[in-house]
Length: 211
Ligand SMILES: [Zn+2]
Image (cartoon, rainbow, N blue to C red; front, side):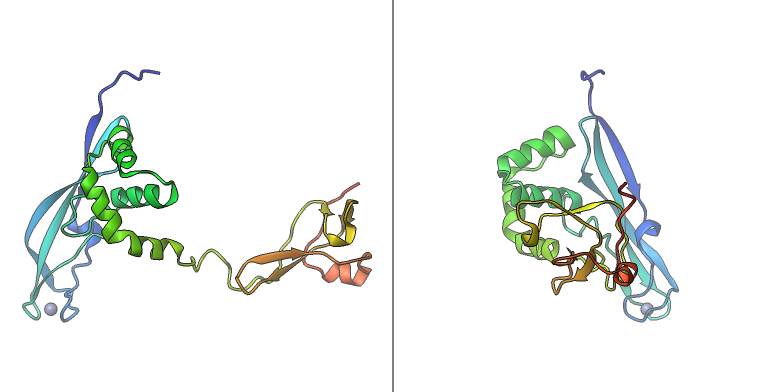
């Protein structure tokens, strides 16, 4: 492995067709055209071997139907920002979830990701964007918990260590899945005794051959 290398620069070209639908924001017509455009050069997250610059073509559209002009923005390259969303999110994640200082964040962005950001800029991101960032990251993900669980099958032999069997391990022959108000799924087992055969059949989990 050769650690003695220079960092290469890669330019990532992003065209309007990659992120614009060209639909008029005033009347909804798709009979529009690009009247003018310019290219924004935005530092993107790179690696120790690659510096990445996004070249984002930012168009101004004109509508043939109503005459309006409008722009469309790439969500990963917010307008008026000198850095990509990924770079800002990296800094905020390090600050809020890894207790990193702005000095450490600046150093790692430069050394590990090839992005040079002044410490003062990182400080500003933390001051201005933390509330929105934390609100978004802490919002429950609607996809994370299935809305309705009809059944679940869990393979394996289960050993209860619950209060009914304190001090002695006991084989649990069946478990059931109970959705809690929080959306989490709790695995529960019978408090005592073995389930009847009929109950066994209707339960939602099963054990694998344990013999
Ligand atoms: Zn229009």
